[in-house]
Image (tube, rainbow, N blue to C red; front, side, top):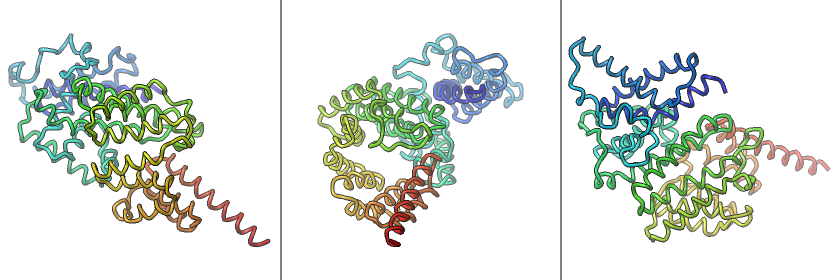
Length: 423
C-alpha cells in the first residue's frame, strides 16, 4: 500500500470523529467542513514526510480546530475573537479528545453529529443524505446511487438540507432522551446506508471501503448500547454482522463476484455469525417485528444453512412478503422474486418482476435477475438484451464481469445447439 493510499484510508476512517468534534467547536456545518478539508490538505503534505500520527483523528481535530480559528480571525479582519465559549465547548476538549474518540456513550461526537443531521425539521431523505455527506464523506455520486436518483437531484437535496439546518438554528448539542427516541429511525436508516456503501464495492476497492462497513457496525453497536431494549436496533446490528461475515467469500482470486450459493462457507466469519444470530433471536423474542428484524431473519436463514441446498427458501419468501407489507419497495419485490424462482420456478418470478420494468429501468440488479430468469427459460436472445442493459448499468468492474460470464455461457449454448442442428 502506498503512502497516499494509506493516508486516504486513514482520513476516511477518521472523518466521522473529526467532523463531530469540529462541529461541536464551530457550531456550523460549513465551517466544520472547511476546517476538516484544510486539515486533510495539511495531512497530505505532512504525513508522507513526518510519518503517520499515533492517532490520525486527534491530529485532524487539533489541526482543523486551529485552522478554523485562523479562518474566523481572517473573516473578522483581525478583530478580537468572540469569547471562547461561543466557538468551543471545552468541557471535553484538548487532553480528553484522544481518549473520547473510542468512547461508546451517547456523548460520542459521531452520534451527536448523526442526531443533529437527523433533526426533525428536515425531511427524512434530506436527513440521511446530508449525514452521509457530512458524517461519512461519501461523494454525491455515491449517495445518489444509494437512493437510485440522479446526481444533480441529490446535490440539490444536500444543499437544501444544509441550508435548512443553518436557517433553523439547530442546536449543536446531543439531544435528550425523548428527542433521541424520535430520531432513532432516521439514524438507523443512515447507519444502514453507510454500511451498504461499503458493502457495494468491487474486490479492488474492498480494503479501502471496509472501514465504512466497520464504522456502520460500530455505530449500530453504539446505538444498541443506548437503546438496549429496542428490537429494531438489535435487528439492524444483527443484519450488518451477518452480511459482513460473508465478506471474505464474496470475490474469487480473480476479483470476480461469487454468488451466495457458490461461496465457500468455511470463509464466513463464525464469530460475527454467532453474534448476529444471538441478536436476531433476542430481537424476535420481543414480538415487535420491524423491517431490520425481518431482513436480519432472512440473513440468518442463509447463515444457518450449512450447504446452499439446505436454505429454507419457503421461509425466505414468506419473510420477504412480510417485508413488502412493512416497507413496500420495488427492490424488496425484486429480492422476493429470487426466492420465488427457487420455490415456484423462473416463470413465476419473471411474471412478478415484469411490472417493475419502468420503476427499475436504471437498476443493475433488475436486469441481471431478468436476464438470469430468461436464460433459465431458454429465451436466449431476450436474456442477452437484458444482460447488455445490466452491463451498461454496472457500478463496478466485478458486476460487469459477472454478467459477461452469463453472456459467454449463452454463446456456448447457442454454438452447441447450432452444431446439433447441423448434424
